[in-house]
Length: 465
Image 1 (cartoon, rainbow, N blue to C red):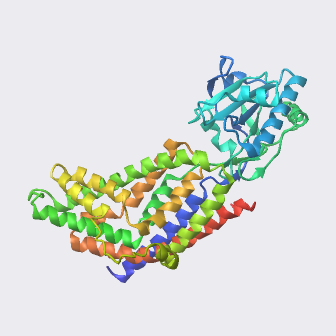
Image 2: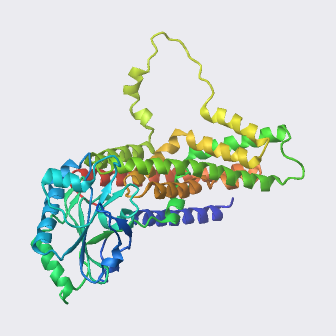
Image 3: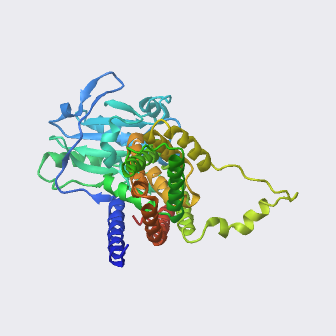
C-alpha cells in the first residue's frame, strides 16, 4: 500500500477517534434543562388500591410525580431523605387535599413488601395518594430514566413538577446514591409555592437538569472497531482464518464453482455476527449486575482503579509489572515440567472446522462465538473498560444487550476484509491493522486512564464529568 494511502488511513482514523470520543462522552451526559418544558411521558398503571388510570387523565391541574425506591433491602445511606421527602409530601397533602400527588416506587426485589406498607410501618407516614409499584425492568420508570438518573447514578428520591398541560416544569434530584444530597428535600411549603407559581405567569422556564441517556449506536459501532485493533488480537484472527482456509482447501470443502472471495466475505460476516451474539448476552448480564452494584459508592472507586490499571496495561503488561510478586506463588518446588494442553482457541477451531462440512456460515458463526469467549488477553484491556462503563449506566438489560451487540459488530468488522481477500492480500491488510493498532492502543490506553481518574474522583466527591 502506498504511503499516500497510509496517510489517508491515518488521518481517517484520527477523525474516527475524535468522533468516537465525542459520541461516547455524550452518553449519560448531564445537560441543563431547556427553557421549553417537555410533555411528561404518558403511562397506564394500577395503584395499590386497584385503581387503573393514565397520567394524561390527571391533566387540568398541576401534579407532583414522586419517583422513589423503597424496598427490602433498603438504601441505608438515603433512608433519611426517603423518609423526610415522604413526610413533606404527606404534610402537603394534609394541608391541601386537592393537591395531586402520584408516587412511582421502582422496586428491584419482587419478593419484598410494597413500598407504601414499608413506609407506613417504618416511618408512620399517612399516604393517601395513588402509589404505583413498578417492578424491574420498570415498564413505567424506564420512560422517566432521563429524569431520575443524575450523573450516571440513580437519584433516590426524585420529585417532578408537572403543570396542568402535562409538561414537566421542574426536576429535583433529592439524593444521588453514592454521592450525597443534590437538590435536597423539597419541603411542603416550597412545593406549595411552586404549585401556586405554576398556576400563574411567574413560572418562566423548566427548573432542574435532565441526564440524557442517548447512547449513540454509531459511536458504539466505531468504538467496537477501534477496540478490535489490539495488535495481538488481529494477529490471532489472521492466524485462525489462515489455518481454517488452509484446512478447508486441503479437505476440498470449497467447490470449484464457489467464489473464494464471496465465501470468505460470508465467513467474515458470520464470524462478526457470532462475536456480536456473545456481546449481546454479555450486555444483558452486565446491565443486570449493574443494577445491583452501580449505586454503591465504592463502585466508582473500584471502576476507576480497574480502568487505570487497564490503561497502564496497554503500555506494559500488568503481568510484567507484578511479576516479582506473582513469581513467589508460581514456584514449582518439585521442578517438574507440566505440558500444557490445547488452548480454548485451538479446541474451538477444531469444532468449527467440523461444522464447516455442513455450512460455511454456521462454521464461521461458531468460530466467532468461540473467539469472543476466549479472545487474546491483550484485547481484554481494550474491551473491559467498555463493560465497566456499561455497568455504570442506568439502562435496561435489553438496551444494554443491544448496545454491546452493536459494539460487537464493530469489534468483528476488521476480520471481513481479511477473510474476503486472498491470504496474501488479507495478510497485508492485517499488517496495516497491526501497524495502526500499535499506536491506537496507546491512545486508547491514555483515554481509559483519564476516564478511570474521573470515576475514582467521584468517590472523593469531585464530580469532573
